[in-house]
Length: 346
Ligand SMILES: [Zn+2]
Image 1 (tube, helix red, strand yellow):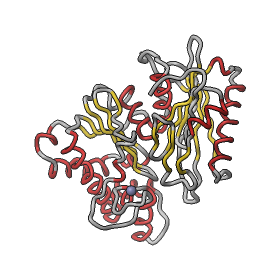
Image 2 (image 1 turned 30 degrees about the horizontal axis):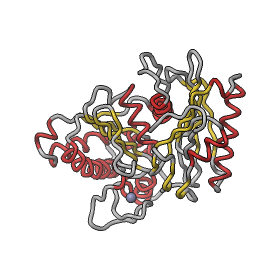
Image 3 (image 1 turned 90 degrees about the vertical axis):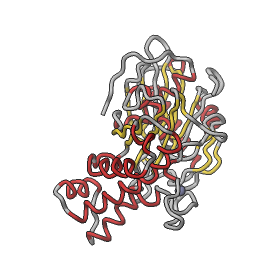
Image 4 (image 1 turned 45 degrees about the vertical axis):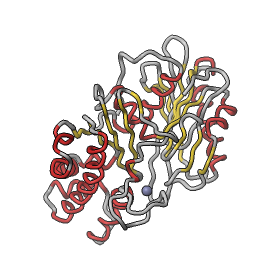
């Protein structure tokens, strides 16, 4: 990736973006974070961050009214400009805009290939479009990769030689950080852990594949399974609470999720020999109910040498990890020195 200060803003897609502010302090970052409900609504988080990656302003933008990507891009543009104005800043204060998107993205070209869980986003040159609209440097990447970057720089993957980060939500995203750099692969989209097949046959996945990890342990799949078993709608929080009270049905569901995640991670552990696996996203809040079966599965099934030195830990930066990662992406692209102080907002 190269730095484009004046003419190449890049805006990304729905997951997250950030704006960096120039001047003494400051970096403003805005990032949109994704959260879907059953009506396929997505909330974007748009935030302004300073040079220490502290969030100054954060706002939500609902995508419900913008099914057409180009209307949504315009709404994102308007929101960013409004945040700059409300902060009494000008574009001269902004280092750049960082975006995290929930799907495969070519970070170098600034292109969104497609978003498995958001209709209408296919082959969109978001960086070019947003840069032109905003006249600011724009950088984008997959949201899980940005979470990985944030956790590596400031969170639970700090100091790891090889870290694999996973986000468990509507989708199952992933990022690989080796020797401090995100591993991107030939087409810049490596790390799609959610789309590792874990069976020869099984449910069709939103990516078009079959029996992908995400097709078993994405939020909606877990909730659908729980509804069948409990004969009513049930939230993830309630499912965790029931498991903590030793409800056998809830424990069975979580153990199934843990085993499937463990199965995919055995492949990851054997292939990459990581020293850290960081698990984040809403599903990770289940805690030991989820982590214990995952750890057991890895100990039981991974090759002993690889299994011995890998630590499975919970993400530390919380739901703002993507925003912070987007800010770091901008910081890295504009040559900002490593951060020394930061504040974790949860
Ligand atoms: Zn898939």
